[in-house]
Amino acid sequence: MKRQLVRCRCARNASWNRVFYSTKKATKNALPNTPATMTSIVSQRQDLFMTDPLSPGSMFFLPNGAKIFNKLIEFMKLQQKFKFGFNEVITPLIYKKTLWEKSGHWENYSDDMFKVETTDEEKEEYGLKPMNCPGHCLIFGKKDRSYNELPLRLSDFSPLHRNEASGALSGLTRLRKFHQDDGHIFCAPSQVKSEIFNSLKLIDIVYNKIFPFAKGDANTDNNYFINFSTRPDHFIGDVEVWNHAEQVLEEILEESGKPWKLNPGDGAFYGPKLDIMLTDHLGKTHQVATIQLDFQLPERFDLKFKDQDNSYKRPIMIHRATFGSIERFMALLIDSNEGRWPFWLNPYQAVIIPVNTKNEQQLTMCNSLQKKLRNEEKADDMEPVALNDWHFNADLDIRNEPVGYRIKSAILKNYSYLIIVGDEEVELQKYNIRERDNRKSFAKLTMDEILEKFIDLEKNYK
Image 1: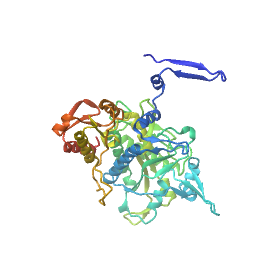
Image 2: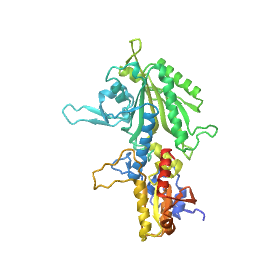
Image 3: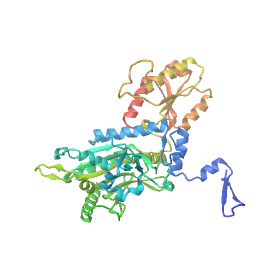
Image 4: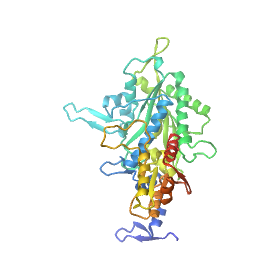
């Protein structure tokens, strides 16, 4: 059927043209599937997020969205700590104005900050943090540091707030309150190159190995490209120091062999940066990860470490985030997979469906499998849930609906696995299990075989 539309000129305002579509399908086809609209569509189908005008620019994570968010955080914490040597810290949300003046944010970034004034007589001014770097500088400077402690790598997942203009807010991709897998590395000059290469290695693990994004450049093995952003018009520090920092980053880029583009004048006010760019399905680019080289904040906070010769030297600070905004990363994942999450990340990992909801034997088999997969404890005893156990998102659909309807419903929600139990399965004591992406092929597996399969998928980020 052809898409049809009707144009109508409003009598009260001749300059206003309304467009009406004759069917819901035509309306849907007419809407641009931007990451924001795709996020909205998938979120409604899978109950992931919601917003409310009482908190513009902030996202409510519903239980299923929180499952994805927490899995991403858990994944990144494991990589940072056990592969790249980061130690996680938790820092305050709010700081006095004097801190932001010291860091240079009050002069160069205050328009993008939320400011708070106390109600006491002193009426001190505070700022909600838009980034974590000044707080991490306070941690480094709290005690004497030795060269043996370098590189010192700190990670932080605290929420950040930036006063984005209301017109710039866009779904998950542009928010006022968001989270980053933020981190800062304090290192000696001789360690800068290896630390940035390690940061690029983690970026490769995320964007080229674990998450299936479309390629930013068909001629390379990368799913992303790099913007090399240099000194902006408003900056702190000496030009000579900036030139040296830019030279270091350019040498690293050339040595890496990765595709990159020069982005003049778009660096942070304290240093040049490498921005990792993804391309959505409409061809629009979005910044995700970032690596920034900073000689300025260690100077402003008078950070120093005792070197091997007992002299005090200034560390160099590397700002880095791999997901960048975790909310934006999730939006781009949805744009890429349209809600078809990999098993380990899926809030809808498996649904167990009895053919006959009145059949006690089928229901018993279904309940037994759900209990084993979810690995839940009863609240009526005093035993705590064990650490490091497996807990899968396994649902049971026993609605009083035809089995075909329940299967279709599961497909629309993008369950990774459909597990069907009928008379044949009861007789064999095996479950009929079908993959989401290959529903014509199915296997008959025991309960233990299904659990083993799911554990293997989760362990290997499949």
